[in-house]
Length: 86
Image (cartoon, rainbow, N blue to C red):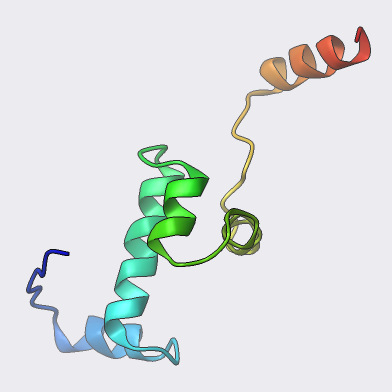
């Protein structure tokens, strides 16, 4: 594991401390969530990085407003039509 030192302004550090967990854990979670939201990592990789099951991560991200399915309306309709023909 690599260690990175990150200087934070006092205001930001204080906000991270309000999460009732160590600042390092909060920062790690926020980084992983953002990488997942951007599509840089899979839900499985995100779960692994946060030491939780894939389904726990998906539920956690969903509660925070990060959708598991990221489809346009047209993509969703195509998926639905394909499922109906099976």
